[in-house]
Amino acid sequence: MPDPAPAQPSRLYRWIVLVFVSLAMFGNYYFYDVLSPLADVLKRQLDFSDSNIGLLNSFYSIAPIATVLIGGFIIDRVGARKALLLFGVICLMGAIVTAATPLFWVMATGRLIFGMGAESLIVAVTTAIAKWFRGKELSFAFGINLTITRMGTWLAQNSPTWAKSAYASWQTPWLIGVGFVALCVIGPIFYWILEVRAERRYELGHAAQTDKIVVRDILKFGVSYWYLVALCAIFYSAIFPFETFAVKFFIEAHHTSRELGGFILSILTFFTMFGTPAFGLLTDKFGKRALLMTLGSLLLIPSFLIMAYSNITLYVPMSMMGLAFSLVPAIIWPSVAYIVDEKTLGTAYGLMTMVQNIGMASFNWVLGWANDRSLAGPARPAGYHLMLQILTGLGAVAFIFAFLLRQRETGPQGHGLETITTATSAA
Image 1: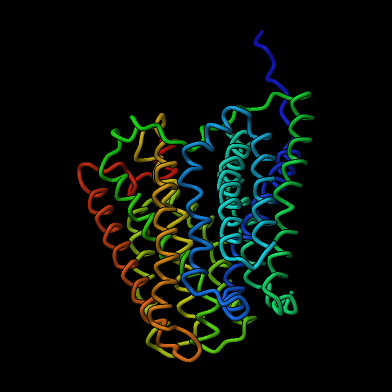
Image 2: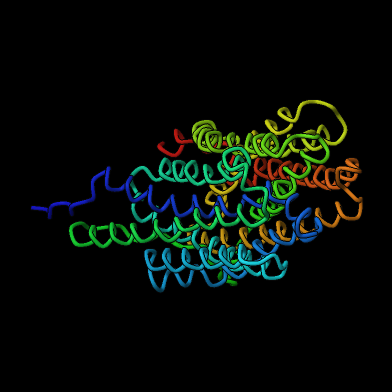
């Protein structure tokens, strides 16, 4: 007789595990995104330039360049639960340093430390989820994880409403953020307890391959992969650096309150919380991945132009951006798995993450420099036009790479991005 199947944790147990690892990322996302509604306060109270503000997020994005080289190896060596706790502690240390002093370079160093922990934490969470849900509800689990973590972004963007008095000081919003970053430690502690308890009673799966670069694998990637990398880097370089300055821009150029500015920015996040899983399911069913990414990239161009040169309500361009930011990320990361060999997937994701963050680090500073050069502010709202022109240009370049990807994928050298569906996979 065949051996009985090993006992597995219950479905409820798995979802409890998911909640705790997602809480760690919730705190991570909150602290990253609280900078946007705080930007004008830093400028007014600490005399930070827009270049300084952009550099705070540039320093965060510099961290993953090293993370993809060493973070995956650390996770492989010590295991997901130890890595989660280690990176969570680093996040908390970085947040404390950021909030400790008004000195710019100390604050920037704190953002760098926080970024090192935060990006590695994301890789460790991904590894843990794959370990617990591989062969089960993996795609749905990642969707729920994404929804929970982006609630952290949404809460940070709306913090001027529920924590209005905190914005009387540059430091208080950071300190509230430190409280949320404590979840980056609390979540992994509970995960550790749950995993140790489960290992004594059940047979758990193996961890997934982590994102790390193996140089010899890079030579194996084809043209479609490099189109995806370029699209990813440019698209994210338009979205996240814009978010850095969005609330300040809304206040100074569109005369919103901080509360309303934060809420308008959070429309983008609200779309992604629910739109990203929905579009993921849509493409699994119908394909047309490159076509949808082309349409998503195209939406960026009028979004920035409307904000610069029209009196149309901000709800319209932010909804368009929210739709774009739901479409492209929902498709671009899973698309890599169709284009590269499974054995090189860790390198493919690691390299794409590194290039993406090089772009984000660069354009956070570039947009800050553009605002300073154009004297953007309440006395000169048109000074923000240069920033929006740069972002429009990025949207146009993203569209070009998405178009080139679709052209290649509909030709004889395609990998099935337009045609593979759950029905064809089953067949």
